[in-house]
Image (cartoon, rainbow over all chains, first blue to last red; front, side, top):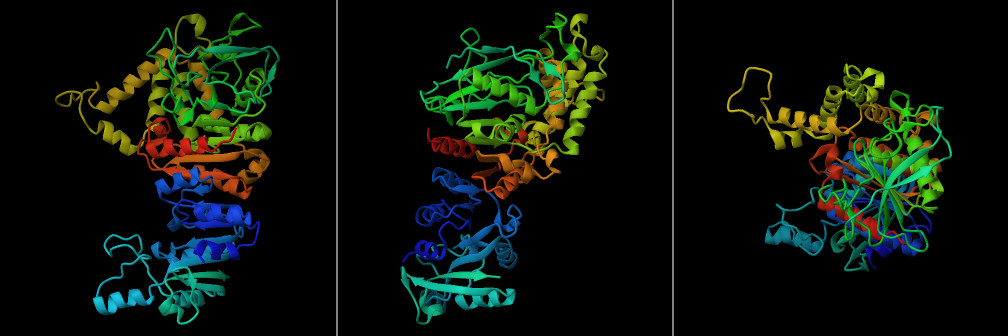
Length: 191
Length: 368
């Protein structure tokens, strides 16, 4: 199962979706085609914004670090932050903003507690480089890595409710020792 | 691309926002490409302050006169005339062919001059709708413009919601700020205090308020460029070897502004300048809705593409984001591009690969 399939399963048909850091708009297109869920993407990168337009996806070129002032309270059913959390400088205000604008937030991120990452740090003694985290430490858009445990602690601090969690490795759901064996985490949270 | 300017004449009176009535009027326009059989591929291009209906191509008898948006409009260009039937039009009140202050007032047989009514963006759009009827176009694939042209693209979606499929709004503002109006007022004062202005009735006196027009244009030009672009282009470079300690031209920027002002004052009409700046000042679609732009856009049906430039301080990106917010509040289909081209307000006229590719992609997705 892919992340997109997971998210599509969680999104009610016809729901209004906001995808933060939407890349080329593939997820939004997928949600439109499979769930008839209309949406908007937010993307800062020029080339990706053009790809979104080419993909016929609504895209707004805005900086997430500036907050979500363009969006009214509760104007979306779901606000999605797909593999972008780790590239944001200030997670707390963004999480709050997501749940001001949306009824629920769907957040996914590469799990820094994945055993392969742990081994690279613990035994090879260097920052993890992998399929999920393909960057060198000095040349990465990622600034705040976290593990499942860290993210759940942040949710607790912000008083957010975790409705659902799916942990994946190579497309397979991980239920045993997810913080160790899962490479990607997908959460559904609400205020 | 060789093009030929045309004129459409309308004998039905046009009631203006001010309450005045134009008994008859003409619109100068040009077309590029072919209208398809379904009449579904028409794109109306609206111009900004000092441009005209000559959007693209050149004239057979004037090959150096290239249209003002020739980089954007033409075969294979972002607005591709192999696919679309593009219409450039000159708004009423202009001095480039459509009925304006320099036209003959049928009541007096003399140029309208100061008696030509003040027109608004809404009036321009109403006149353009007459042109659309004349050309047999019920619904535009897109209405597009930059700056003041963008206001017309916005207003089309509000005045004739069913007649616009896409509104493309570039370097726009939903209303002028006090600072914008202030710049316009200084420009108008420069014109009106010129001794050659004669209260707007200068045509029969054989003079033109050239000094006023020069200063108006110089002021305008400052607001079209960003501080960085101006510094990059002119810096503090001197025109002469050492400072003159007098008031002749020392710096390149002074020379540039004087040159722009001189050029402008030879071809632009002062009465038109006054009216266009007033049209800008008055434009405020939210005014009838208690200042609530979201309510103003409730009647829009078009899809929107909004583009701003971060170096534009005349109509900043924040103003475009207000438009985007109002469209989102109304659940409109909208995309927004915030381009960091450095030129300032004038960036909308410049080649920028990202800006052009975005438009190319957008027009490519318009199904006919």
